[in-house]
Image (tube, rainbow, N blue to C red; front, side):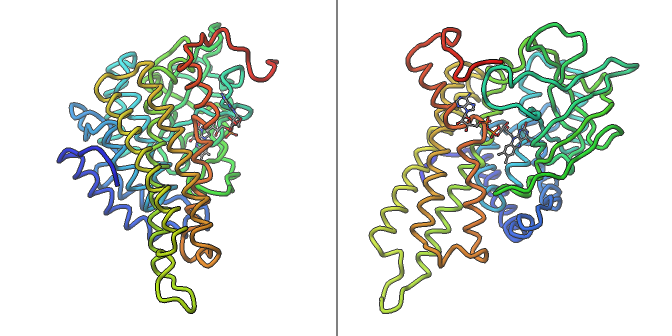
Length: 402
Ligand SMILES: Cc1cc2nc3c(=O)[nH]c(=O)nc-3n(C[C@H](O)[C@H](O)[C@H](O)COP(=O)(O)OP(=O)(O)OC[C@H]3O[C@@H](n4cnc5c(N)ncnc54)[C@H](O)[C@@H]3O)c2cc1C
């Protein structure tokens, strides 16, 4: 496996994540089958101090930032992809909040207390019914925030609300009533269990089933003033430019781990299976070797580009160059993971695709690698614009706007 050298602190994080992943793996099939929340895994992550992974040391956290999460996420995903993808939302929220200079110190202190002292788990919801990755009208926020005594009441619906039921707080963007800015929005931390919150159990998908990414209706859910993080002129702009590394880079490490898990399983299964009348296991077959080699090389390449992007973010913070590096890393990782899933089926054959091996579950979990934001077509569009030096304002929308 090719990867940049890790510091002592990162090696420690990696070792802890490996230990947790080994335990997660024992329950991953059951959570997938039942679409159940891996609550005991979240408790273990809390116990290991991982809730504070991206909370800076001066706020009581681990202060490992995006590099810490990159290393941990790849390992955790090998044990239970759903747990890693769900917990990614928590780490991403903390990374975004503590790295954003526009968020008030008082809000950071409150968030640090909630996470580090009260052990709160947080999910993060941007998607609403009807929204897509098209950077036009479908990114407009419809969830309304109405001013009331001491805070706001929220009205609207969010969907793909990963880990909502297991979380204490949800980071989301809402639109304050009367806000005339077309893309203006407010970031808030919403208590998930309060009055005016209804969860609709609709998440019954191909993969990542234990993420329980359900739909949530907000009908008067209360957000106290202290939980308002910031207000921005364009939340899409903020999301892409300021938070792009976390929003796009953090997930990508989880999917890289899913690809590695598939590769490892192909190696193991093909080494164990010997066909009738032959003296060597299937791993000796040149076509199996070739497929393993191709996937291993592409996953290693994806990891190097991804870690390079993470290092850029750690060293220089948000910039167009950093965003470009992440979009390239996401594209390469999505392709490598999709290839790992596709080649695994051919290399191992139907003998290995029964539920008992766990390979079919990993393949289902890998299916969303290419569509998890930024989806691969979005990545190519952005990379093409940047490589060609095009002015985004001069590019026609791909589909006619309403
Ligand atoms: C497992 C999982 C968990 C999730 N959890 C959360 C969560 O916790 N919070 C949350 O907010 N969201 C979550 N999401 C939703 C996610 O953030 C996206 O909003 C959602 O995936 C986008 O919708 P879509 O996949 O239906 O694809 P669409 O965005 O509708 O895209 C479909 C296809 O259209 C094309 N396309 C769309 N936009 C573009 C573009 N700009 N450029 C080029 N081509 C384009 C691409 O071919 C793309 O694959 C989750 C998604 C998954 C798969």
